[in-house]
Length: 345
Ligand SMILES: *Cc1c(COP(=O)(O)O)cnc(C)c1O
Ligand code: SF4
Image (cartoon, rainbow, N blue to C red; front, side, top):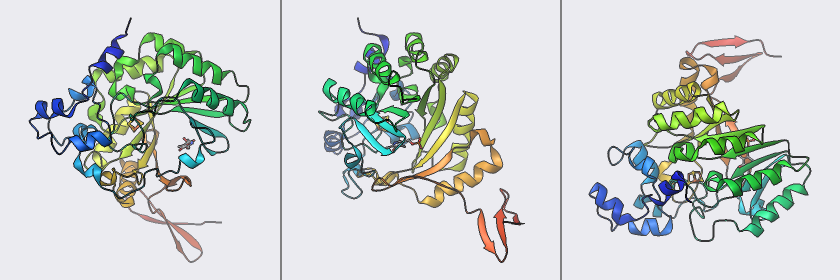
């Protein structure tokens, strides 16, 4: 028997012709884009699009600008940091375990555009086993991040089996899951799934929301169910031109997330990924957002602004220019712009 969320996935929009018909567009310029980078829009996301060009549209509808050849195919150098194909190991103590090659809706700005949703991107059982063997043989790893693609597109039985195998490795102390289904397919968050996840505490689920328009009644209910089962919820947002590159949009998103018991964790500077350059903002945009948050929302709702450096050099948090040197003292600029001389050591 297939579950409700699996039916939703089957009913997703995947053909350019259907998209063009629905919104009265010319399919010709979109076809080569979707051929190179797959199209999938879940029914839940489709009904959130109000007008072409709105913040939901821009995240999921293919754009001919994606065919630009600038940017990096593998901006974080992940292929070279993969000891086996299903693991990315950059920091000694933690590793990404790529358990799925597809998502409930394809973000046009995805860092792993080179492969997500493409043929052959789903790891085989052998590749998954090699990933578990690698983690088991590497005692420095105490934090395993299930990622992909979207780990929650796996059926409960497969996901439960993988979580169980990783959980049983003695040196693995915490498990994290990165998933966007809370936004794109909230039907996936069933009571059975929550009961399953509860078995692997301490378990952290990092969601991915970019605009408060994604926070529908169904989405709030899904997050509540997870939180009620003791799953600790965090959120990652990508700073995207034309979607959320506006301090007031992000202030609203972060505060609403906090109220849903989803703690803002990272605001990501858009990576240098090929096909995503039209989403990139200058670093100053993110710094301006961060400065605006301090004066207007509680610190609990304020994420770190991070840039993931090209070449796999890792994430670096950036702060608004709060510091400057003046003789013996350090000048610190407060959230309302006042300069205070701080007697530094
Ligand atoms: C982002 C990332 C992590 C997790 O980093 P945290 O800052 O601990 O959340 C781990 N491995 C890789 C390869 C990453 O890109
Ligand atoms: S949900 Fe994440 S992995 Fe999937 S397409 Fe979006 S950014 Fe990429």
